Image (cartoon, rainbow, N blue to C red; front, side, top):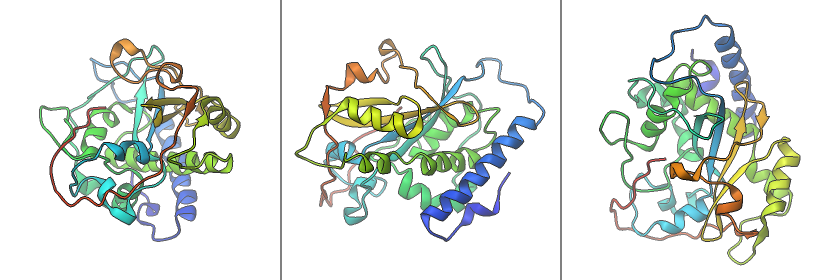
Length: 274
């Protein structure tokens, strides 16, 4: 189901409002539509996690530049939380993956391309794995591994990315933290509890933070299937994936500011399999 608001050329704020209208329509239609048979190998997920990544931390890893890495965009590189993915998860800490053989087709999301480049960019070089034994784009990885498991709330590739953007615009973590005084800095450290409290006060739900070397690297917001906020379930460390804020973040954390890399060498260095 495609809608007119997919090709907006207006301000981001107004675009967010229209995208949220689309989101409500999509969820309403999904909820009222007749059920389609679920895959035999995967049970239906319990909730969504909107995984956000902090460019100031991710871009520190970049040593060589390539056209697919948003860290290499010099003055146009991202300086706010960007989307890693919209992930269907289970309450027991596990998650479904690669639920159908729906291959990614970038033409289907062409009207969302500019927003995806800005708010859902790849922050690495390299080609992540897709579900069927190949390599592909960052968006291909997210759709095939996670998006295909979003049934019955999200039924196709286009609406997976549209809804991901809509939720991102509505729950603006970067703005919440800035309003609370938590701004990007390469010298300041902030109390982890204060960051968590700022988000809890804004959205009435507890996020999950993931840190690396004392810096916030990812922040997850969690939602019921109707996209109302809920507390995040901590993923099990035995699954070699995201772990709880308490075990991955110190009491005081940094939100490193983006530093322009100024790198010209094009080289594939990193792959992303989350």
